[in-house]
Length: 236
Image (cartoon, rainbow, N blue to C red; front, top):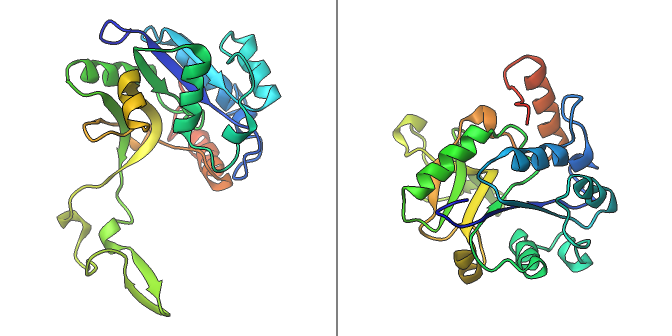
């Protein structure tokens, strides 16, 4: 429960990953797959009242069904191609499952290092605010946006503004979405049709729990960091 209303966790996964083939059913450090970790995370949280896995993939739907969290049917093909947005997928989940109110928590399977303590802290901060949404972030150190370049007519120009050549310590701290948590009221989601409305509350997480898996390099970095003990998986 969140603010005395039900909290529904939605785990969107699809087949045909190009960056890391089969990534959502791939074991992490010889243990559970990314999808199973996300499911067990959701089921272990006393905050979450209901968990729904939405997918177009039969294998992943079967995995979700074994855990009792599968959507009623496979996701339609038009919501499983590269052009489909997470917002459109979630709108379909709400309609298919008759979810009219309460709160939504989007859990991407590709964030295996988040912890239940992170979710508890995020929910507590959210309840203490009047925000309609909260999103997890991580500090972004390099490259700073002010120092990025682009190529125009065969020449190097500043990507934004006039370019910046000074020390990064003199610049404001930028943050990036880390993909671990997207929390929003059903009402705000229906109105905004996105997960980051103007009043969204930031929840900053440390780098070691903010790794998001999109490419083979991301996976190799994760395995190396686990092997050397720099990052630790939490059992869920």
